[in-house]
Each structure stands twice: as C-alpha cells, then as structure tokens.
Length: 113
Length: 114
Image 1 (tube, one colour):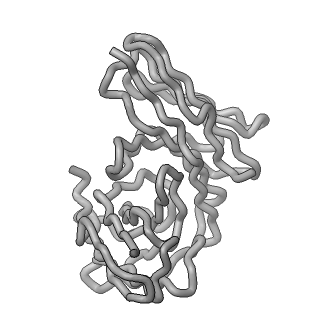
Image 2 (cartoon, chains in turn blue, purple; image 1 turned 90 degrees about the horizontal axis):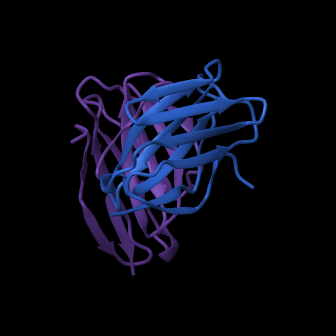
Image 3 (cartoon, chains in turn yellow, blue; image 1 turned 180 degrees about the horizontal axis):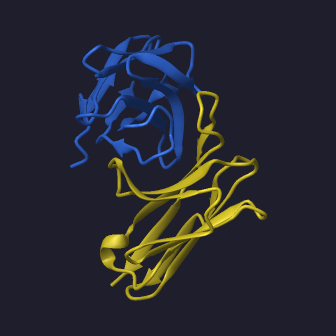
C-alpha cells in the first residue's frame, strides 16, 4: 500500500460532533501536511506538522503526529456543515531536492445538518 | 482566492493531441508544483520548479513536460494524449525551494480526452 493513506475513506457525522481522520505512512518523514478540498476545487492548506512535533492546533483543528507508529490524526471539533469536504494528508520525506511528496487518497467527510 | 491562477478552466480534446496548461503563481512565490488528480482519487505529484529550474520530479510521464519562465509562470505540456489522461490538473505555489511550507493551490484545469 502507498505512503500517506487516510482512513476512513468516508465519514458521515451529525453537525456538532467531532470528526477524526487518520493518515498512515511508511517511511521517515520531514513533515506531514493536511489539506481540505471542496468538491472539484483546489486544495486548501490546513496544518503542517514537522517530524519533531507531536501536536498542533489551529482553531477547531487538532493534528497529532506519532512517528513511532508512523501515523497522524486530524480532529475537527464541533463540526459544521461547511466542513463537508475531502481531507488529504501529504507526507514529505526530506526537505532537499531528493524529496518524495506523496498524497493519500483522502477521507470524504459529510456533515449532516 | 489563493492568488494562484490556472488557465484554461476546462479543456476537451481528442486522443493523440497535445495541450498546454498554464499556471501563474502567487506574487512572491518562486516554487511551482504540478499535480494530477484522477476522478475521486488523491493527488499525484508530477514535477516542481523553483525559480526557473526543475527541482524535483514525481510520477511524470515522458509524454508530459513542463517549464517555468523568467516571469515565474509555468506551463505543463501534455502530448500524445490518452483517455487515461483525463483528470484535474492542479498547480500550486510556495515560497520555499522544497515542500517545507504550505502550498497554495490554483482552481485547476479539467482535462477531458475523448
């Protein structure tokens, strides 16, 4: 399987609930980034977490990184209808010109009103 | 609005043809990345340019090529098109020479090969 795999593939929750998505990867990384994509549109950057960081927050978003398990999670608290989108993680293996930049297939999140 | 522009928005062409996709990065950004997104799939990184020079290659086919011009806009050329090349093509830009900071994505070009 490929580096940067998200699970679940799809998630449907009620507005106001929390949503958790996971990303697993296989090789050592320099950083991991989460992006959101509304249907058919360009991606929007959410959070970047570096390999020496364990947790980052941005508003209602919380990202954790566990390098020993090679996994990251994205938590969206108090979800809103506007959070309906696909969420992708991207892993970057090293910061120089020999990097690998690999995207997962994404988690499709649906927030039901 | 990310500040990254892509033209055209839509492109319909036939197998065997050649097309050129254009991207203008955000003001001040020196890096341009190209991605391919097939239907309901994640992104495939194709290639990156930094300040006019090719910086890194991903899964770019030999039929595809790109360049970045002195004014920093970039073009992705797709030739001998096949049905499987139908996809959304995104470019993204950033300040740094590598993917160590956030990327700003354009709205994409939807390519349909008939």
